[in-house]
Length: 340
Ligand code: RAM
View 1 (tube, helix red, strand yellow):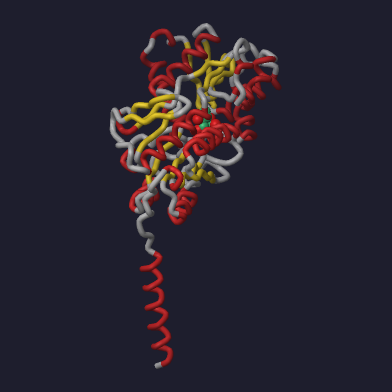
View 2 (cartoon, protein in one colour):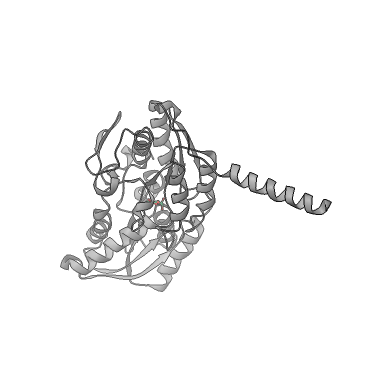
C-alpha cells in the first residue's frame, strides 16, 4: 500500500514538474536596452568570428542591448544544437547564428520560434530551410561570391591550368553555396574553359587538418596551378603549405582570407591577391537587425528598411535577407589599410 502511494506521489510530482518545466513565451522587450541577443559562431578559436563579435559589441554599445556569445568546439553539422537549446532555456530574445548545416538545426529553431525567440542566420543562409529562421544577414551578394573567386584565380594564372578547392566542412552552408557558384561559372562561361577543377578537399576549418589537406594536394598534383580556399582557415593553411614546399608562384593560393592572417604571405610573395569583406560589419548589421526585429519595429519582408549609425540604411531583399557590405580584394598595394 505504502509502495503504491509512494509510486503515485512520484508520478504526480513528475507530471507536475514536466508541466511547469514547459517553457512559456519569452517576455517581449520594451526597449533596445531590454533586448538580449546571443551570437553562436560555427566554432571557437577562429579569428574570423572574433571580428564578427567586435561588430556586435559596437552595435550593443550604441543601442544598449545585452550581447553574449557561445559556440561549439568544432563546426560539425550538429554541434550547435545543444548551444541553441541552452539559449532557448535562457530565454534570449534573438538567437543569431552562423549555421554549420542548412537543415540539422530546423527542429531546434522551431522550438526557439515557439517561445517567441527570433532566429537570424548570420554570415550565410540556411538555403532550403528559410522557413525556420526569421531572416539572414549575408556579408555580400552570394550570387557573386563563387564567380568572383574563379575570376580572381583566373586572373592570377592566365585563365589556364589545374586547380583545387580547399574548403571547410562538407556541410558548411556558406562554402557549399559559393562552391556551387564556382562550378556553375566554370561550366557556363567560356572564359574559364581552360581552367580545370581537379578536386575539392575539406580541412574542416581546423588549421592542422587544413594544412595536411593542402600538403596532400601539392604532392598529388605536380602541375597544380592554383588552390582556392573559400575559408579564412583554409587559405592560411594553403599559403603555409605552398610556402613550405617552395611552390609559389607556380601554385597561386587565393580565396577568402583575413588581412591580418595573410599579410605575411602577401609581403613575402607567397600570395598575390585574395578576397573577403568586413566581418565586423556583418556583426554590426546583425545587431541592429536583431534589435529591430525583437522590438517588432521591422517586418521580415522584402523592401523593409532599418538604419544603423555607422553604415546608414539597409533594405531587406526577398526572404528577409540583408546584405551587409561590398566584397573587398586585398593585395600588396592595399593590405596595410586593413586591420582585422
Ligand atoms: C571561415 C568560416 C566562415 C567563412 C569565412 C570566409 O572563417 O568558414 O564561415 O565565412 O571563413
